[in-house]
Image 1 (tube, rainbow, N blue to C red):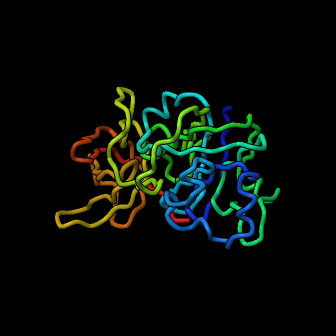
Image 2: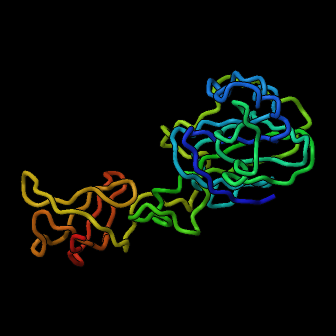
Length: 261
């Protein structure tokens, strides 16, 4: 089991469940699941896993029964555990919470297309979900904010058979996004701009002359070795020569002006 799915959610929720195990909820109100996930009987019983992502949007999730890859370990920031799913029909859905049955609507092929429906042996499983904060790494950072094809997934869902009862859930399963710490130590993790990067920014006026707008991974403050070829309001490209990660500053050399579209 190693599959990656891209999905859109406007409820900021990742749902993992066997559609057949929730058929009874079709007769419930449409938003039966929208309160504290940790208080839902199906979540507490390990039948369905619901996770608050902290924001709407388009995400990628990799589903595996194995360990994290080296890149995923380097950039894993948060972990939600003590969740479970119960598979009774040989199928497991991973996708947005809006696909949960309710309001007289059952899970359908339309829902299936919004996520991924995996074939998996019947049984009880434990679920761990990692958030992977790769966005500020120079390895994958892009100015247009479009993730490159080789970037890690935003979330990794680890599904393994379980033989013991789940620990009690003490709080809502939620990614907060408010930590600066990574889960694992690493000697290969890169964060922020690196020498040699080509970045784009705007020229501004400062109290003591021209300055540059923050840019690049983590929005470091740039400055130029020589400002003689730039003027106020220019949009420019520059090459990063040196970086001070403690001060979140970088120094570069001017390359060219960027014409306004």
